[in-house]
Image: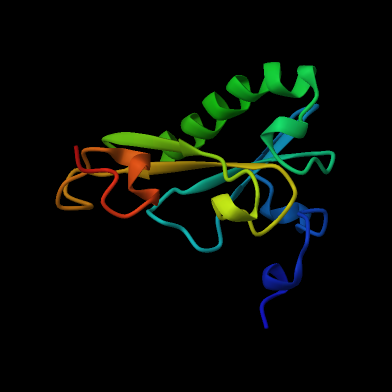
Amino acid sequence: MNLYFKMKDFTQIPQDRILYKDDYFFIIEDIFPVSPGHLLIITNTVREDYFALTQEEQQALPKAIKAAKLIVLTKYNPDGFNIGMNCGATAGQTVFHFHCHLIPRYDGDMENPRGGVRHVIPSKGNY
């Protein structure tokens, strides 16, 4: 079984997988990418989810998201991005260590992208 399936947090990520690190976050490639360039922005300190972040971490998150975007743009040419966080098991969270997904999107990667993240609940993305 893959090491990442057994992890309850991201403290065991090998240092050579880290693409960026600052005082609050580090960035890695997702090992199960939704699309080419899919990255995870993860807190250096284990926090359960977005709502458990300190005020300083919440304020620093946009800078880390921008850093992740720049990493993607050095290698890929996406047409858009989804930014997502799963908070709680009911929302699909499986690793209870804060991480934010930056998912590059490409023209034609799905038939009708309208509704974006609303598609997490089937049929709710169509309006």
